[in-house]
Image (tube, rainbow, N blue to C red; front, side, top):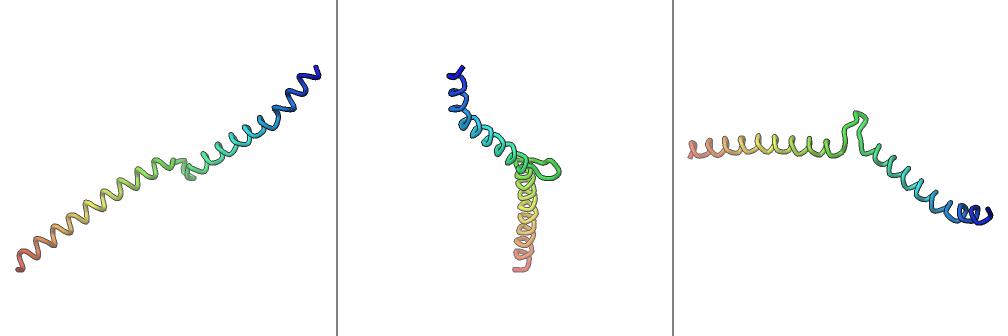
Amino acid sequence: MNGWVELAVSWLPFLALIGVWFWFARRSGMQARGSSGVTMIELYEQQVAETRRMNNFLERIALSLEKHEARGS
């Protein structure tokens, strides 16, 4: 019986360290979600879609300006 107690006591710090690591991992995982439950990956995908949409608008404006300059010259 004494051997089991020594084994449990020797493994206790290691198990506590693993438990703390899991707790931090879960906590940081929860912080990776916004208050609406949207994950960071979804937010990045939305940002990429918005950037593409804005680039499309800017390309249309640049094309329009080039056409305007070509008519004026």
